[in-house]
Image (cartoon, rainbow, N blue to C red):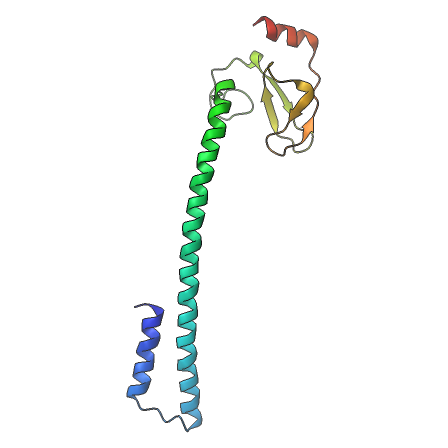
Length: 146
């Protein structure tokens, strides 16, 4: 039974007992039974609101998944890391010499990038902090030769 059904059942029991509401005990029991009914109604409304919010959150989650898929699909063309570099935990078949790794000075996140990205205009994907990175010229030349 739902809370509203249980509250109605208790009210029916009280009516069946023919409580004398002129006594102190009868007044108390009648007030408690009314309170239980009101609480059951309020909780029912909260449950309905919660169901509505859960549905809304699921829709937002699906939309966010679509946005992430769109954004990450574009990035996958530039960099397909399978995990062997320090920025990932899985095995990776990408040669470490093709990428540079720097630590974000703001949050400490390790950032991987290749020669197509200007090291003087880096932005941390974790915290959004913008910073510069100085790459030795011989490292850049070695990357260009590959």
